[in-house]
Amino acid sequence: MAPMIFVNLPVKDVEASAAFYTAIGATRDDRFSTPGKAASMQFSDTIVFMLTSHEFFGGFSPKPIADAHATAQALFCLSQDSRAAVDAIVEAAAAAGGRADVNAPDDHGFMYGRSFEDLDGHLFGPMWMDLDAALAAMAAQPAAA
Image 1 (cartoon, rainbow, N blue to C red):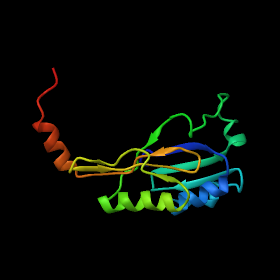
Image 2 (image 1 turned 60 degrees about the horizontal axis):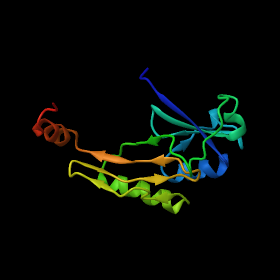
Image 3 (image 1 turned 90 degrees about the vertical axis):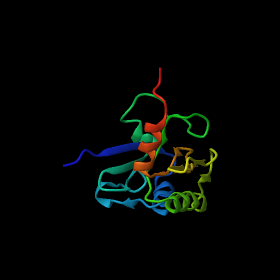
Image 4 (image 1 turned 45 degrees about the vertical axis):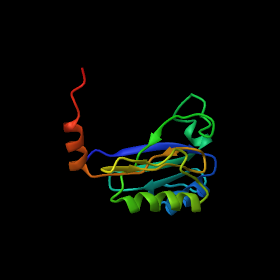
């Protein structure tokens, strides 16, 4: 089995957040979800976000939960298949109550990215990259001293 990543993310309202994540393309896996407590949201066969209530998340860590509207804790970068897909997920996030383009769009020709925040302020950076063009651009740069 390929390694998987499970992102355990504390949210204020599990069901509202699950609706948001559904709107941006994740699929809820009810086998691993408990209404109001946790929602397993699958982006791919290997990427799963476990949205947990603050109370439930508190059972995993004694540390206080950061207010993602006020502090940066992580940036979740989700690759997309095209520039249009980057635009679509950002637009879907905004339509579902998130905040689009928290940072200015980033366009290097071979790589394109935008950003959004979810309902709790968690920061996402969807991006598309032409890997061959990116490697060629990196190879053309002088070696670092």
